[in-house]
Length: 143
Image (cartoon, rainbow, N blue to C red; front, side, top):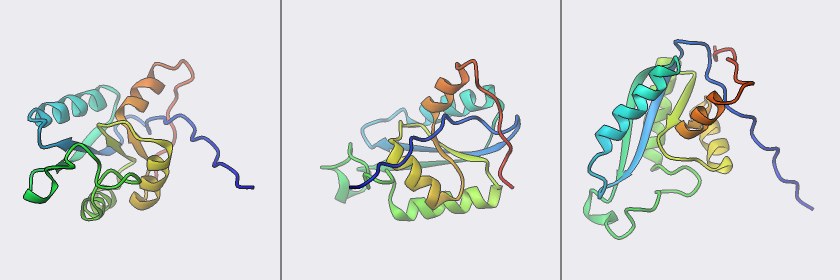
C-alpha cells in the first residue's frame, strides 16, 4: 500500500521585498511572451516581491521541437534540464526566496522543482489565489 504525499500548504510570499526569479514556459507559437513576462513581473512587484531575474524557456523554436512545441520538455519539470540548471544557478546567486512560474504547476511539479531549485517553486496563479485568502501572511525568507 503506497501513501500519497501530503498536499502542499498554500504558498505565502516571503517578507515584502523578497528577491524572486520569474520563469516562463512558452510555445514558439506564442509571440507575446515578453508581454506575459512583463505582466507577471508587475503582478509580483505589486505583491511586494522584487523580480531579480527573468528566464524564458521557449518550445519549438529550434527545428527539432516543432511537432511537440505545446508540450513541456518534461512532465515533472516543464523545462529542459539545462534550463533547470540555469534557473537553479540564478536562484542561488540571487539568494531568491522563490521561483515563480507563469504557468500553473501540478503538486508533483512543485515538489520536484522545489527540490531541484533549492527554494520554493510556485505558480503565479497560486500566489494570486493565496493573496486573496484572508489567512494570507508572510513567512520568513530563506537564509
